[in-house]
Each structure stands twice: as C-alpha cells, then as structure tokens.
Length: 198
Image 1: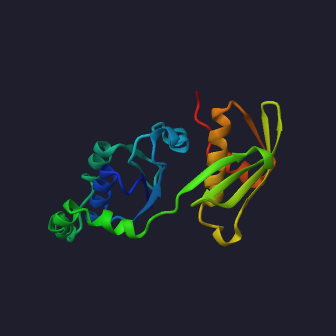
Image 2: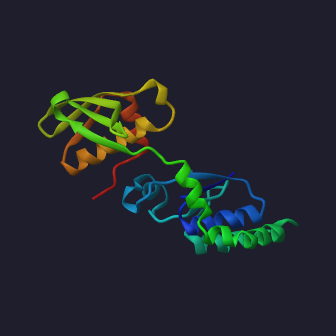
Image 3: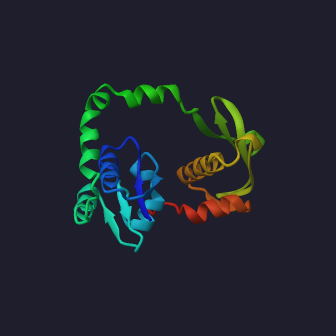
C-alpha cells in the first residue's frame, strides 16, 4: 500500500492525489503538521519537512511533487485514467469558486489551545476556552516531570491527547525545560515524535 504524507490544503499534495486516482492506486493519506518546523517525525523518517512525500510498499521514498510524478508516470494507466482527468477538468469551476472552502466553513474545527496553569501544576488543553484535558506535572529546576495526561473521556480517540502532548512539549522546549515522562502515554508520544534537533 502506498503512503502519501500530505495535507488536504496543499496544491502539490492535491496534484499527486489526482494522479494516484487516475492510476487507480489505493493509498493511505497520512496527514502532517501544518508548518514545516513542526514536522519532526517527517524530518526524522524521510530527511525532509516538505510535502508531499510518497512511500511505496517496497519502502522506496519519493520526495516532492516532481520526484513523485516522475515515478508515477512510469506506471501503466488503467482504462479509466483519461475519464478521471476529464472529470477533473469538468470540476474546474467548482475549484475556482472555492466550493471546498465553503463546505469547510460548515465543518468548522474547534479552536484548541494548550496553556500552562502553573498554580494548578498542570498543562491544560482548551477547546473553545473549555478545559477538555490536562497533564499534571512537578517541577524540579529545569526538569518538568509529567505524571499523568488525561482527556475528557467523551473525546478519547480523536487525537486530543496528542495535541496536549505536542503543546506541552513545544512550550517546554521554548522554555529550555527537560521533560521527564512518567506518564506512559506521553512517553509513547515522545518516542513516536522525536524533538527536532538544534
């Protein structure tokens, strides 16, 4: 199975998705962080923070649109590929009129924020100004010992815990703190998302 590291808003990712569709190739779309400096996992794994990146089922990696398209054009097209390209052209007006943007406005994503509530000794995850998760800690000089990460049970499985961990780690890095993960979830998150070097 092909894995495409990409973002929906990215026109380069969009072009690659269209060619994959034309070729009839199933793929897994792996979302990445919005800003290159946030993409530590992508940088560690593939040596780049630019998207898109395509990983083939045999482990070959193609970085950037030009490299990916050069690879994809070597593959034989199915009989439906031209019809897909024609349908793409037929939907040009919808793209120019930002139909996607108007639909996205109906599915507004909640605003998330991570803040350090020093008096309570916890980082808090706020969704539209309501606390929906927290990470308790103790502070020992430049060491931040994180004991527990918890998210509102009704929101579990939606990535909120990861958002809390990411915000906590970013703040600690900015303040020059060493994070010591006592919490197994934070330890797991840190292992999967190593801090950027330098």
